[in-house]
Length: 246
View 1 (cartoon, helix red, strand yellow):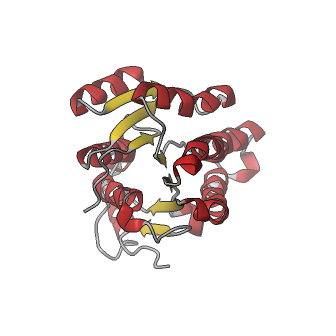
View 2 (cartoon, one colour):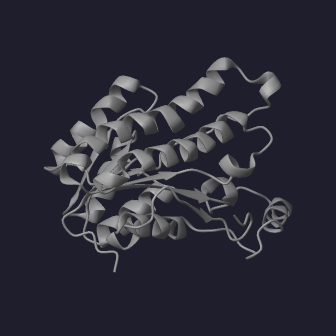
View 3 (tube, one colour):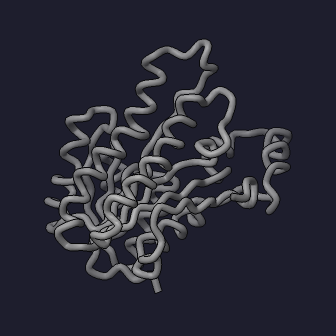
């Protein structure tokens, strides 16, 4: 199940965390994986670890001109068009709205939402020609329930959900599915730095009583990328340990 032999996937933000786990899962199922990020050394090292059927492209998602070139460059290094696009890269610049600068708002939307749109628009051209494609975007539980101090991040991640649902309706007849994965609290270097009291407070909100792993999020992406998910589009998979049940 979930075999991806002969498919080419582009994973943005693939140099660590959820992006790296996703790249490993897709590669293990037979896909040629193009790794995207800004840290060339880490991308190169991961590509070396994966071995055959892996390559990488480096680009800054805050640079719209660079984003326009990611899909063509990824297709070139892979030697074929992109079948699976995983929009994973993103960042946060937190702060209360009263003190938030316009640039802090705009920079988060540029990377988390506008770059997503540009990549989808570019990738779907070849997907339409082949009448097969998978677009999976990583949103967040924050984009569903909000979080104080993250108005910009929440807006961008909620925007990803609305955008994806609309796009799903536009391309469904062309054999392309568009879905979202919304992770909850996932083990990251940031959560590793929390003290015991902070961790206990965090876990008290999660019915399963633990943080999620990057591999668990990556498994959801793998399913959505597969033929087994061909009748699923415009959906949001909530990988959050029951913190929010939708």
